[in-house]
Image (cartoon, rainbow, N blue to C red; front, side, top):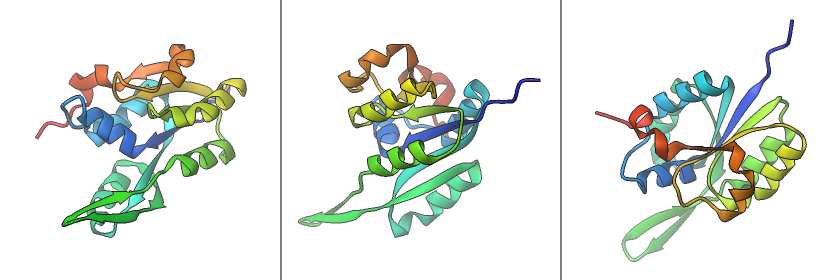
Length: 162
């Protein structure tokens, strides 16, 4: 009897969220985790996200859906009366994806900064898919075309509807 493969998803939350929104729709996070489990057999979905204290209800909700949240400290930047937050999760995602024990990985991001991680995973025969949120993903990822699974083409099944 063949042992079941352990599949983990490593999700760049900001790239996913903003990428989908740039297509004019919002992601249903519950549908997305079910999609990952049903299509790819994902046993753990790691969501890399900046920590902002007043978003605790969102974090609780995401955890209740089955995501494993890995937080990054954020920097609050003020321009006049407008606050924005900066928190780049790339290094945390790469570190976790290279040190955890699993058989196959799905990278959810269209960011070219993950090129070295994706090349590493492919060389180790651990890359299962690269899920890109929109058509404007990095040209660095073009050489991994056979692994690309476009989220933007799944609006009908993954869109949040009130």
